[in-house]
Length: 366
Image (spheres, rainbow, N blue to C red):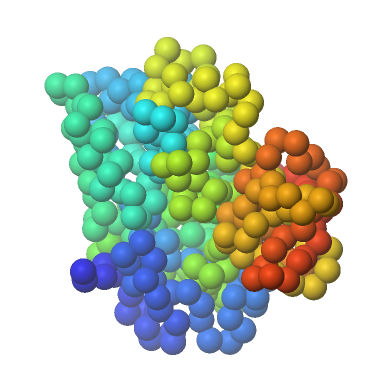
């Protein structure tokens, strides 16, 4: 199967990026000059720029489009108004997560969706099959690039290019740059203040070059998906395929806040309500390693008596804390501040159970 490439692919090659497959896309993992730790630190302390064009893009349009989406996805779209964005989930009948995504409400008859790369076709297919007459679901994967500018100095970068920065968290504005209209969204996956720019593919290189120049002028760096992963893990943000999956529900993944429980319907509602009431499933918690070592996905979590009480879903070295951290699905008997043991290929690491995030940021600051 041929890998897909971003409209910015050649720019990454020219920068000497280490490329790898991600959801069927050939994407930059890290760049020369410090790698993941340096890129991670740049975002936490200054600013970084990411190409996340592998994210899916789809439009649901037609009379009643927003209402239709609301009957399918978990979150309650009536909580927001046009110009706002919302995190939501697409679930199966058993409550498992087909995908988690961001939706942008443009109008009652126009909703823009940004799913994960590998799940776009399934989400679009499910919505297309369920769409009533007059509502159209259109995949636009190749029409746009998505560029994320993240970090405390992200406002400075955008302001230097006369792009808007005065909108609230989870909202967006349209702007003009390089002779084209783009969407500037106050969203991101790093936990830092930042923006995601949705740019027509044929204008992406010019926009990237101008943004990168402003980023590097402020001591920032181009950043790959390696740093994106360590940043999101420090925040406790779930990754589909790790903390979320067709077998892992929002209740289990501490994502129940993104479910509109009072809505009359959404895909998987009956199963999710039952699971929420039963309180019998494992749930996601954070693990902070107290010794030397790095937990990895799939490692067993044990209690003080050696009984298996969970499994690591994501584990990494935290560049900010300078210690190992993990997200894990554990039994409900495991409480915050408990001490547990992580089995890393036969080596036992002690860890303290905590509630993410592992670091404090200003992502929602006005």
